[in-house]
Length: 271
Image 1 (tube, helix red, strand yellow):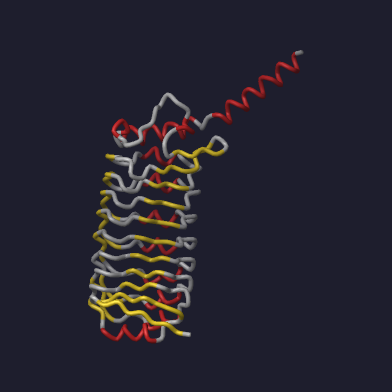
Image 2: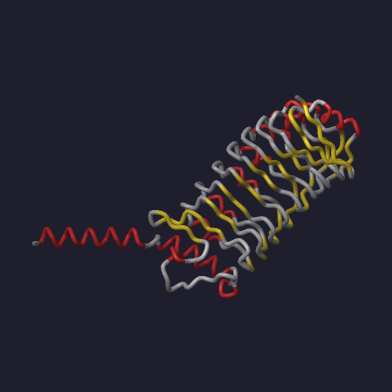
């Protein structure tokens, strides 16, 4: 009889463990709720209910793996407790009213492969620690108030497929080591204050499909070598200070490339 009781107790403990996330993760979610005026969210949380019923929270095996609170009227700052969501794979806080610097605690989210923070009011520099989040495949920070240069450490994110930093106040040059991002399919840096030439190393991104560099202060020419990228379908470079000779890229483009330049759209086909 004692053995049966012990077995039942162990089973009950297992069920309770499966049913709820850790206290650490729950504390992180509550801190986010309190820091961002959760009571005024479009889809608020009832903190007295099970976490797996909270809007935008995905729980798998008692672990919070995804947090999607886009379009939800979050106002305030991201708390440092966010780093306690160590099992998070997707973080989407886009289309809100978040502000301030990005807390360094985000770097603790080492399983994260998608970080979507666009269309908020974040400011300060894009932190160099972002380069330590080596599992990132998508990084979207566009339409904020970030300033300073593009951190060199971003070129360490070798799994990155989409990098979107447009519509900020970024200065300086495009990192020469951008060619380290060999998996990159989309690079969007439009509407900043970037200067210098477009590095020829961009032409080494053989998986690139979209290159969006419009509305900066870039000079020189569009690297002719881009014409060799068979997957490249879209190039946007209007509203820069580029030389006219970059138009030759269109003439030799494989397949079909759409090139946007000063109020002109050109397309070329190559059989």
